[in-house]
Length: 324
Ligand SMILES: Nc1ncnc2c1ncn2[C@@H]1O[C@H](COP(=O)(O)OP(=O)(O)OP(=O)(O)O)[C@@H](O)[C@H]1O
Ligand SMILES: [Mg+2]
Image 1: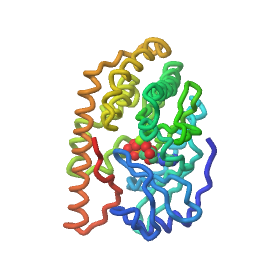
Image 2: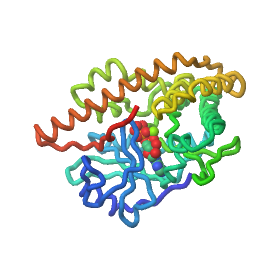
Image 3: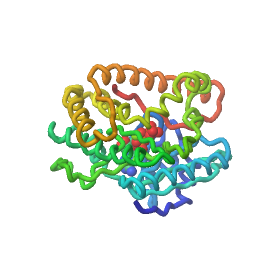
Image 4: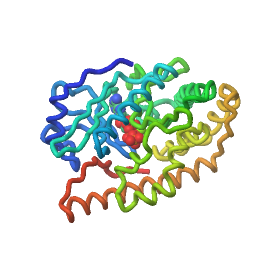
């Protein structure tokens, strides 16, 4: 995996001039590489930071909280790569207090070609090879659950979404994936793992970027379920298939359900995972799409209230319209 050296001076200068409402118009501009449901990944347009992918987490209330997170982040990377053998891009991090005294954490990775990320590549690969790509992702996921089954001291959770995997050596001019293709896992900012049954990441952190008027509802009704989802291969697989709805390619769903079930009954049979049904993927997607668009709308309202009415800082970079 390798550890990146990070140009802290430039990153702090970026933070100083950051416009979270329009990252691309910050004093040092940034180019957005990708939006997830919660965060934004971008390239800072200055020598020393170009060719890197940065994800900014302004969610910490104290430096101590950020230190605990840092330890979990590093250990998660080590577990995925060192213990399980999942390839992760060379990465590092930077953490500091902003000029306003806010602890900020930047995850920094070597930037991978955008076209090589799964949700882009799936649109240019031949149908059969999209299924191969999903099989390769399932193969990586199997390693995680095999690890979890081998011992019970540490249990690792992972988000298997198609947009979290990049294809090594991908050539958009000649898109190709086969059983030997290597994948890289990029989404390491949610270090979910349990040691002797104890979650190492404080789940409260999930709620920090949520509007305060929603936090209690989310905590009460959704939090445990969202966290548990990442430890359950059946649900991670359902989520992976449901991504094809989000990517406007529902025609893949029947073949993907077959692919997953075949995988679960052959290669992954020892894991004893319930098969997946199309019906289940459909209703899961409906609910998931509703939750995330509701969440994003609530965050926009929160941003409006804070910046326009209360004239306060709103620290989060929100995604634009997401087509679902
Ligand atoms: N190292 C990288 N190089 C190029 N693009 C990247 C890199 N890391 C992330 N991206 C882009 O940004 C997108 C979002 O990244 P990632 O999956 O890490 O965050 P996320 O899904 O927003 O996380 P969450 O929603 O869990 O906070 C990816 O799908 C990808 O398109
Ligand atoms: Mg992601």
